Amino acid sequence: MRFGRWPYPHRRRALLRRRLWSPGAIPWGTDLSTIAPTVLNANADVTLTAGTAVTAIHSQSSGVSVPLVQTNTIDVYPVIMGSLAILCGATAPTALVVSYATTSGTAIASYTFPPALLVANATIQVPIFFVGPLSSTLYTGTGKDPLIQVVASTTAATLKAVGSQALFFLMLGVE
Image 1 (spheres, helix red, strand yellow):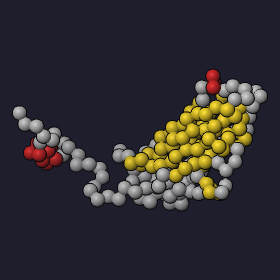
Image 2: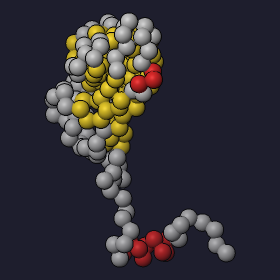
Image 3: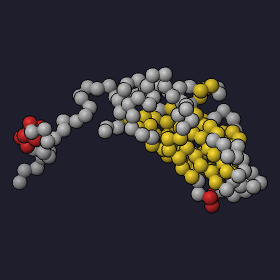
Image 4: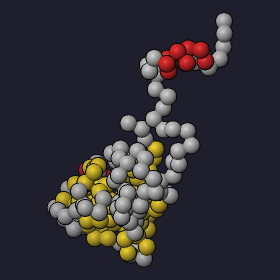
């Protein structure tokens, strides 16, 4: 019995000749660099106005938005992971929805916090994880500012700058 790589070299050559096996979508030597991992944060506490999508954290430097520009047009998934510290007031919101959007403000992905977490006068620390759609053009050209937006329903809350941040990066993807 032969041990080795599958498919065996002679079998792989036969499959490639018949076009039944893809040699891969990314040619050897392709530059796979995109955007350096970037921290999304807030300079100060942010009031989450009831019923309104408020930008909680984003790519910024001293309060000025910094658009992120993809260096190569290859297929990538935008990935955001981090946590948000949210202070509920004397009356807790009935729901909190956090979403990932770009500069246009249109939500790409969203998550609804479990209502049991929303307790009056409590600071909750909620992990967030978003994976956006596969694209080779979303962050090209002039770039985009990835936004983490929060909608509090019925009652306002406060996003605490201390304890709220996320890491944004582009992960290689193949259609």
